[in-house]
Structures are given as structure tokens and as C-alpha cells.
Length: 333
Ligand code: COA
Image (cartoon, rainbow, N blue to C red; front, side):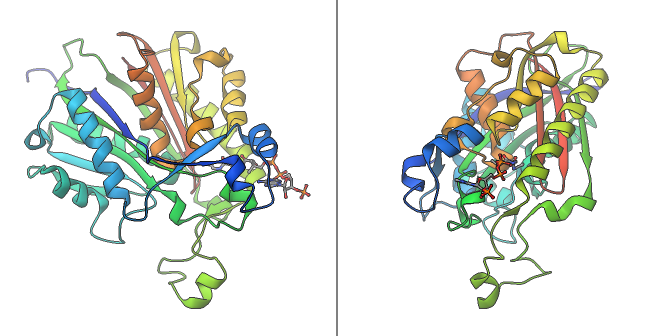
């Protein structure tokens, strides 16, 4: 290529497990109701992976669909980045399992841990490889089996989360061409002072798995919901504005916002603060709940397959998650 490289999304895919867990069913497990969950979160149901499905299985199914939509073969893929907080194992990386499953023998593979911002972090990392010209075609995947981290006795958290996977194929293209799906900008941020507000305290080196720790449910998601909510809205709005500015665009240019799907109230608050009509904010949190790193690639794939993305549309992706971490990316479809 004569001109510098830029990165373009050339295919999307997603996979959601078959099993649906409704609010009604949850209300038989913990003291909650469909009415409470719907009004506070917008969630109606979520998907739960089968016992024999690991995160890499969900990731593989999403990846194959993205590759089919991009028209690429396994040997074309030279980079696989999986964003997840529910890897199959501490190591090897989930990305290596995906590589084995799809036969992408030319790929370099690793995982990224940035909680619900993970997919956009992974997109930026992959984009840096592509723009530098060191890799040409990447699979970027967000995949989670959060049902394994949920405390099914805690009504404050168990109603919020679900399992699923989404993927994109991105390719290095000549900057002089008008390739569709071009990633125009990405910004990322983190604030490690707030690590305690959203975390899984046990299961790592700080608090290894012991019978006592499991009895105390330290291996499950702990969250300060109200604080998390406030930071999520503030950071996602700031990140959106910065990513737009970096792309040389304004709010008026946005055709569709694809925000992290954690809570419908967070999504409408972001749309309001960005002065966008609510119909410009994509929402599927009602069907899937919060699938962490998977929400944005799953929503992007659904928007794509529903025909909501037209060539030339400006699409704003924005995420927030544990860490805290946040990120936003602007794409010209
Ligand atoms: N069913 C019924 N009642 C519930 C409940 C449930 N599933 N979960 C909590 N409650 C109760 C609480 O115990 C509390 O009762 P109390 O007033 O008697 O103490 C009451 O409902 C209100 O709880 P509160 O925490 O004030 O609710 P909220 O309006 O803040 O909504 C969340 C709670 C978790 C839905 C909301 O804070 C949220 O979405 N936070 C951000 C979550 C998020 O985005 N996480 C991931 C970021 S990546």
C-alpha cells in the first residue's frame, strides 16, 4: 500500500446462547419482580450459556459469523484479540482457543481485560497493529459467560447480567481509499482509584480460590450500583464528545449511537445529555441484559443485520466498565 493504513470494519457477527432466563423466572429465585427489573433497568430477559459452553465457544460462533459476513478465510486472519472478564481459564488465552476452533493458524492471539469497555479497548489495540502495517486482518471479539460470576442469591446484581458474544473483522486499508466501516477515532480512559466500586474480589492472586472464599461469594460480582450509574453516564458522555472531536465531527453528524448495554436508564440519560433523540440510541438490553465486553459488538451486529447502518452513516460506539474504564469510537459506515 502506498498511503498509510487505516482500519475498516468489514464484517460483523454475534452469537447468543439459546437458553432464555426471564424476569418472571428470576423472581422465583430471588426476591424481585418483573416490574422492578423492567422499571429500574429496562431488562426483560437474558441469555444463559449451557454448562458445556465456555466463553471461547460463544466467541467462536460469533467469530465464524463475522468472518462469513466479511468473506474472509481462517488463514486470512493474522490477529485475534478477545476482550473478556470470563476467560475459559487463567491461561491459555481465550483467543488461543478461538484460534484452534477456527483454524486461524497465521494469527497472533491474546486477551484483553477491561471489563465492559473491553471490546473498544481491543478494537483500538487491533487498530494500532493494522494502522502500523504490522498486521492486516484482525478478529476483534467481545465474549462473556457472566453467569459464572453472578451471585444468584444477590438480587442487587443477579438481575443485571447475561452471556453472549459479538465479533468484528477489521482490515488494514489504504488511507487514500473511501473504504466503508472506517474507524475514524478511538479514545480510552481509566480510573484505578475506583477499583472497589465494581469487581470480582476473589479468584485471582489477591484472594485465591478457597472453600471459605467461595462460601463468602467472593468469586462473584460486587457492585455499588448507584455510584457506578453516575460515573457511567458522566464518563460515557465525556468520551463520546472527545471521540467526536477527534474525528472532526459534532453530535449533529451522528446517525446511530451504540452504547454499552447495562441499563436502559443509562442509555436514555446519555442520549439526553448528547441532545440526541432516543431512537438514535440503539437498545437491546431488554433482550440480553449486560453482557459486559459483548454488548457493543452484539449490538453493532444486530444494527447491521437490521439494516440500521447505511453506507456513510456516522456511528458512535461508547462503553464504560469496571476499573473504572471507558472508551468511545467513531466509525464511518
Ligand atoms: N428487585 C427488587 N428490589 C431490588 C432489587 C431487585 N432486583 N435490587 C435492588 N432492590 C432494592 C434495593 O434493595 C433497594 O431497597 P431499599 O431501598 O429498601 O434499600 C431498592 O431496590 C433501591 O435500590 P437502588 O440501589 O437505589 O436502586 P437503583 O435505582 O440505583 O437501581 C441498579 C439499581 C443496580 C439497577 C442501578 O443502580 C444501576 O443500573 N447501576 C449501574 C449498573 C451498571 O451499569 N453496572 C455495570 C456498569 S458496566
